[in-house]
Image: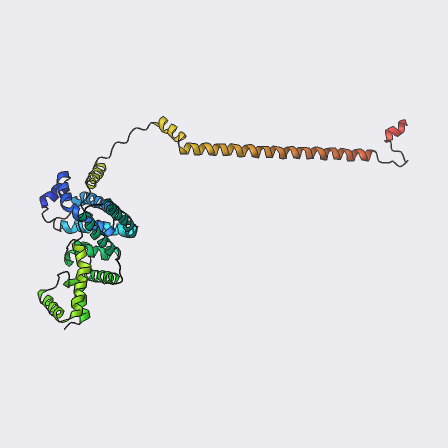
Length: 183
Length: 165
């Protein structure tokens, strides 16, 4: 996302759709995957991605180019995903849906690689379903997206020690969960 | 000198995330070389909490998401002109639809209730009239009985009748 130039951002802010599409092509992977991991299902992740980019398009005119666009879009994404996760609490319900999809893929006899990917996805989703949305956001941003503690703190607008503390509690819980045989 | 508990806290956060200063990192490494409990804890953390996330595949964004975004943006900037309303067609549709049927049902119910209520009310009026007539006739009979009361001279006739008798 660092390679998005100010020129592209300014043109998009002026309503230039091709420039906005360039932003979308650069950032949508991050937005969609973070949303998916925080809310736990693809349908809501699609809606969040749509909401994030419509918000970006509307508010880009008022964007302060001195601040980081990357941090801003991260923040909008995580806020939308957290609101959705807290509001609906759909994670567990959608896990069932995921399991059904996973079983279907196995029955159909998909490729070995696809089955392995599904297995990895299932494992990650189950791990993430064992922690609260704020902890989940920290784990996703750190372990999957590779953000530093400073970047996570700026994204979530919290103190760096809060990030550290949320990660520690989340990992303690996951370790305990794992030792008890779950997931 | 850090205790094993403190070392484990650091392992859970900055150590596995590579966020430690070089000096502290080296100190932790030295401790792990000499402490098998902390070393196995670090390995457990790495296997359980790092590797599953690192090997999780990224999902491609479905193509229709961009179409939906552009549609929403276009709708907001150039909202479609509202089509002219065909009042006759919409009224017909309304009548034939669920609301029309519901209204028809309500009207039928009202008519039925009015009819039943009217019959009952008419019957009550008729009964009242009959009761009045009975009372009236009873009062006439009472009066006639007075007329036929036995007089002082023992006759049952009226004074005029007695005159002619």
